[in-house]
Image (cartoon, rainbow, N blue to C red; front, side, top):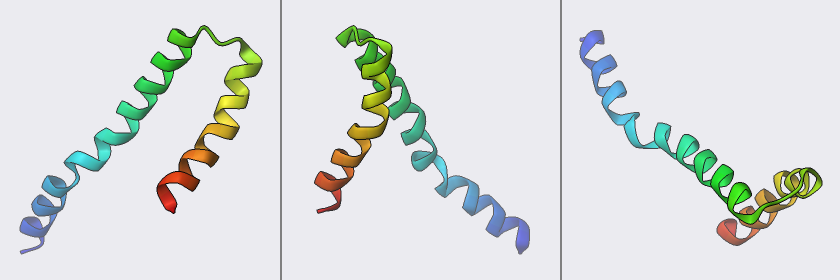
Length: 58
């Protein structure tokens, strides 16, 4: 019984575990494509998630 629950848990974990790495790859691509310098990258790390959260969160 416990083994069956564990297998179902692993199956449901698929999509959410891919979102983080895909987001990170896209973020790195954006930095490279935009030719940002180091201080703009630091600013993007701090500011961009804030505004993204405000837009998505309502």
